[in-house]
Structure formats: C-alpha cells, structure tokens
Length: 72
Image (cartoon, rainbow, N blue to C red; front, top):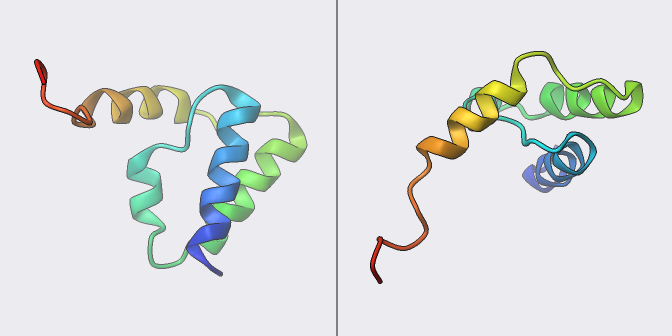
C-alpha cells in the first residue's frame, strides 16, 4: 500500500469529520499504513469518526510548529 493512499484517505477523513487523523496515529502506522487506511475508510462509510481522534488531532495540530517563525 502506498503512502499516497493514506494521504488520500486522511484528507477524506478530514473532509468528512472536520478534524484530521492524529499525527501520533499516522506515525504508529507509518510502516504498515494498510490497517489505518481501512479504519479510515470504515469510519467514513459508517459516518462515525473514530472515538478520541478529534481530541488527539487538536493536540497534534497545536503541537505542530508554525510554518514560519512569528514576526517574519
């Protein structure tokens, strides 16, 4: 399974539920993204976000560095 499939699935998850797949979860499945892609597809098909991912996603987004240093 290509990482592009994970990127497409993660984008579809964000579009469907308004929050992304947490970075921690993506890192856990980096070597074997297949099960994660299946989990994402199942959540979308059922119309139910994965429990706990909203909070983790917000924490992941908050801990990400800004794209540019402040004041530039």
